[in-house]
Image (cartoon, rainbow over all chains, first blue to last red; front, top):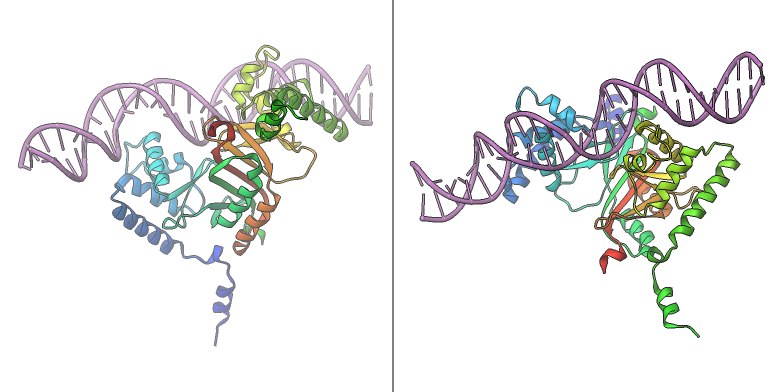
Length: 165
Length: 165
DNA sequence: TTCGTGAATGTAATAATATAACAAAAAAAA
DNA sequence: TTTTTTTTGTTATATTATTACATTCACGAA
């Protein structure tokens, strides 16, 4: 027999329910495993940047990251952060949202996928979803122009379930 | 009977063949008509910004526009350009490519559409295409997250037919 | 182990993009 | 004309990102 609490919890959307601490820990663990496997170096600074990105509930900017790392990495400069970000992007551990000038942890670092981002115009939170099917559709629309398409950037703007209430 | 030249011309893709002067003139004419109809003011400065954007064969940045307008509008400052750009965007006469920090003329100012941009990584040129169908597909992929989607930004990166040769 | 090499980070300066705040001028409305 | 609103001017500054060169650090070869 279910308590009222359990029922409520069940109703919560995936967006609301995820245990963020767990989520962060898991993402960092996976990142370490992936780097070990690829024999690339997830240094302290890179790890700290990745951790900050994951700890934030919203996509975060380079200068925010810099600020939050001032204690542990007093010598860090903007360029330090951007270099770490470049590394993380190259290795599919984070994504850049160019329209916002922010960065977000990749939800599917182990899978080759076409990401799309749902950005809430109210609270600024963002979610990633796989959009491989949509990508095919876009490529179809683009084919008359004879472009050879290699990469996509897809951002959707709207209102998240939390802000809708 | 067709000459060889005619045949060749026919084979040319839409991307290559368009007469840019004509294209610019037409875009500016349509813009004026639209503004008249909407009773909004396409001022000299705004017109000049729009014209510059259309004359460029590539998406162009605000400071490039500013530079090219220095003669006709010596008092123009960055903010002047950005204000004109805001007006043009609000009225669907141009689009912003946030990833590049550039602006491009809207090919379908009279139609309510979901734009997608094909950006050539080699030459920097870009083309717009309508992606309403793809947008539906993306929304479908996004629906489990319960986002209420309002707007989309779709950029595809690849190689244009001119650069492929 | 030490030495050499390439990778990573430090340091300083600056480029490129975009906005804030308030004043003046121009156009539209009353 | 007078009032009001819109547009532009003016100045300053915020925000995001990169260049160039020096130094330090980690890893592999001898």
